[in-house]
Image (cartoon, rainbow, N blue to C red; front, side):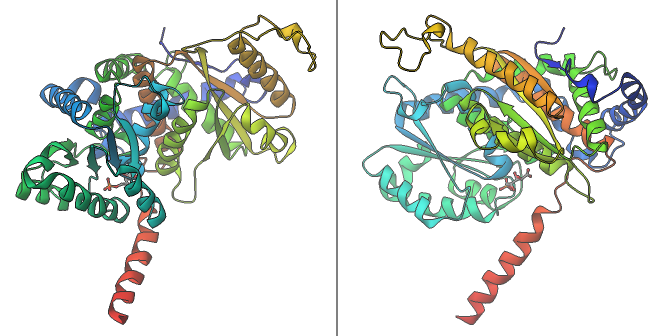
Length: 437
Ligand code: PA5
């Protein structure tokens, strides 16, 4: 049995057994396209075997570099956007809980992010924060030409240069980019900076288990060997195309059946606040993989119980276009019990002594019952605990589900042509402004 499982026990009022039987041949075709490399975008299937084919020497170099950074820097800044940013951010939050940067017992650097917007206010605030501190920068960009990280890189490189000078800067600056090409690779070669490789056959949104994610995760103290082990075990668990034996494929099948019935929006939900960035990562994975050719489920997210007090009304009573997938974590790292209150003004003493995690789970069950009654299909992905191993497993689950979902819907799950549209306009306008000056 797979370590992470799909719980679809509530779905049968929305999906009939014969629909699952009838989608199986389409799943087989999608699986065949993916595995044999005959599908669209096949040159980007590297994520499939990466958990076993990754460069073991580079993994050691990542661990050594993380140890160096932990030793010489109080702050670590990761520069990147989209697939070069979201995976590590979600992983660091998943593995380190809710208050990593503020934890006084933390022995690893504070982790900050840059290059994921064009806000000069953000960069200025960041520079102020760095004053008087030792820091290291990891710029992550496959192309090396994405505007947001490039501008942040220019600004932070200047600060590094002033603070550390030509020799010492090499212990504070690390580049993750293409093996051979691009501006960052050229700069690293010319200046002798240490680089880590983003594999040619792995696209940005599938790259969290490559050096893109591994270096920042390791700097924050994450066990990257266990992370890869979880993904390697998931690779074996999700190999059989039979949807009755492959939960990742069944998830792809069910959401596709629901999509065809008009459930055009999928909400990924969690009852743990530190999984907020997991949803951000998933939104990119699913949105960029599926949203093309006028098709695709719109990926959205909600944090419960927080958003029950904002989105809850719409989910319960609004247009019936939503389906929900819940990340259901069985065991949290720390549990508390509800204190007894002698005054009992709120009348909640009947909960005294109960586990707060259990209360959270009871809320989850109550929400499922309400939403099912309101006509919202709900399934959950059951996760035993928040560990590096479970995260690797989960990442692989969603990555392979994204690829299969794309082929099921007749699109190329590995390209992102739509992302270029705004860039073309923006660069044309920026060049135009330049010529006018
Ligand atoms: O998934 C993708 O390909 C994108 O999100 C990219 O990762 C993102 O645009 C950043 O690109 P780059 O790594 O080239 O700077």
